[in-house]
Length: 596
Image (cartoon, rainbow, N blue to C red; front, side, top):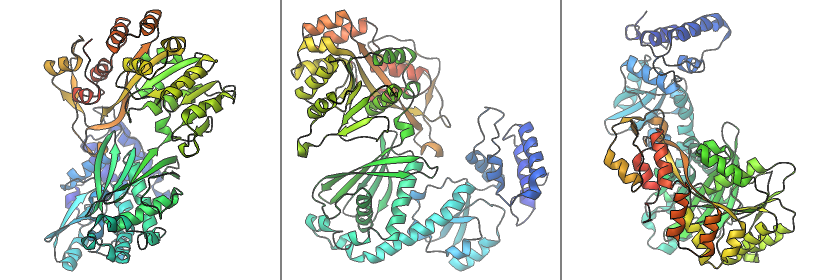
């Protein structure tokens, strides 16, 4: 087998790469040999493809873990083999505008390199061909700086080689068009809020802004963001993504460009771009690179430094999922399915904003929606348009409230009604009336736990006999971050931390815990994806008797525990024991126990 380092300036050769993978046992030997035979048999019929790309498509597995060998695994191996640093390209951490000014697109068009960083002494290039070195001397002569190299995923190198020049060109053009919008010349809040009406908005349809918006949205999809925040500041504005429930600042955008980007998005959402002093809402439907449709719900808010825009991303594949994918345990899933099979009654899902209530309800309605079932919803706003549902959005400006919406739905011959939120006595009474008249009603409340939902209904004036006649169950839920399967590692069990989490209840600690580490796949957070933890109170004769006596939350909680309800932290502890998350995550998300 030949050693790459002895061969001089050359492109990667497939056979040599396969030899290296076999020698270092990156994949199972028999699989590598099978791939080698396939390559030799089909070599004459194929155009050149980068060896790592072609090999990654063969779906090799690691001999030690039986896990798939990913493109990043192959790239890390290549970096080690070439004795160069490995680098994962994060496009929003690259100062695109500065690095693309160093070299022309035409010069690197035939080279597998992309500039990713520059300072006074050096320029760093990412490459997927570490044994091609001739270009370095030319680059060193032209730039008069030290040239550094790192090895990156070949798919990323090819993609960002074009993207960086497109985006950088767009940024530079917009800056030139909006040079008068430099914030150093703005001396008061009113002037900042007026920016964009003349010059900012005029560029909203400019092709350069279109490029930036498309790039921003696609990057958010790639990073699994649930929300995008565009926040104006006195200097550069912040672009932040909410990923797995936590906000991350991913980019600093010049204020003039942010004004134009915001205007472009408002145009797409059919919003009034000339009105920056009034909050507005809108919607956009677009597609990911893989062709999946995605809906974005837009919301603007006037702030002291300009117009803030938040885009909530609704991916149907995430919003509508199987109960097991949501995080329901076997017992909870059985109870939930049993409750939702009732022909009539009221089911409440409770929790703070962002706790996954909508996902639970949409996923449930999706399972219940059949050709013979009429599913109707009244929402504020409609989270995602679902063809199987009949969805109504409330409009306070024309006095169409939740209560009015329920009255309308009752005349539409519904079988199942979903009420977006019970906010007041009128909505609660109309929801209960719908349940009394033979409909299954699902709705949400904002309370800390399941027991508090029952006392909330009593507090807003719903008679106890109506609650007893209709309420089937109450589910409190939270979303916890799931440990990244690619980088989590075993951790020692700290008995004190375990007892703090489940106190005052008793549960044997696991033999092994896991901790978050961080890798490229999870943006160095140690977590990837989220699951629900649940607390379910089922109505029993004893519980109805307590409600009739208008018992307080403590009494309701004690009885529910006696009847087998698992509190949120106990549900979370089971996820910890299963190796899904950490004690710290449960303590962060689940409320502390009340004094029962």
